[in-house]
Length: 446
Image 1 (cartoon, rainbow, N blue to C red):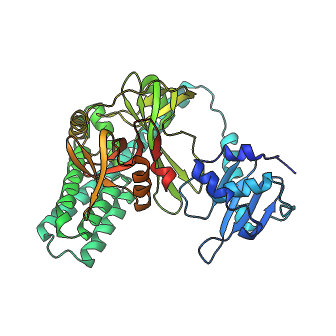
Image 2 (cartoon, one colour; image 1 turned 120 degrees about the horizontal axis):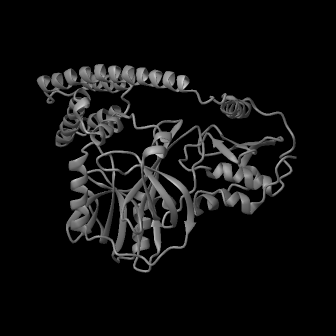
Image 3 (spheres, rainbow, N blue to C red; image 1 turned 90 degrees about the horizontal axis):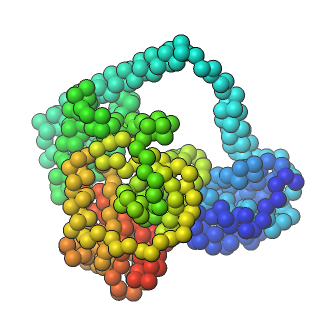
């Protein structure tokens, strides 16, 4: 019946060891209320902690899985377990009619693939090229006009907030702020929505956080000015504005004209965040061994689509094609191949690392994250939260409670090399190394 799966093949798909271990714990028959298969797919319903079972499914043609569970890993433990059960030859995988939820998913995948293959190849024709260029220019002008109209509304709205004041912030104002965040999506400037939502969250935390909200409104007003004066900006600054608006260059264009840096790259850390119930974002941070350049691989997945495999701590030979900007960070990896790890190099001292981040934010104040490596560093905590103590002082830490105890056990009280995302206020910890180059990652401890 269709493809033959092996246990080794399935485990090679696991995003990390903890996912493989968790999947092995779901191989008992009593965990699965339903199992089914045909030539194209596997499916099953696994009882979780909620009232409704999780619905897992696998497209056998591509070994891509989808699941209704809230996991941010692809494939999740349910998808892995489903494939492991098939590899074991579980007799409950008898041929059966697909449920509607499986059929809809497979049909959607096949339809998208068919449309892509059926797209007619365009013959090289200067006249066609000119028409396409004109159409692209019209679309760009239309979008800029919509963005400018939205930014004009935002500028008036920000002025209204300061005239009204923040002392009486309540449900009516909260609804007004949410409405303006939605307005930015309508204006085709979705990158502004997270700034407004973060400002609203700061307001909800009370008076002590009003300063953070005001700072974010100031950055939004600076962006309004950038949109209005875009014709006067340098290409790099205009790219900063576009990226902040949520309108970066197309990947094909980056692959064609982006700055190319070939190097041996180490994966410093990675994280996956769920934006909504159907959309997830993954950020992978790398550093070039010879160039010292940092690179961010930023990808988005809809409806459970899997990611390309990047292993934290490992090295890869690749050429990075950078998106333009005053602080080029986001990149596309080309021809990445796993490589042997060189001898570890010493990271920059803490003062130098923090000075570099300050220069980056001065060049592009709209950057959401910057990579920060700290060594030596010690994890500390008090009633206010967790901190990273370094020779330059203490930095606030963002880390899950489960992960922090895992890190304590890994450190054993010793100094570590820590890596995370710095947002100007706190460090989102992603990975850590001990003196023997043992590796701890937040993704494996969650």
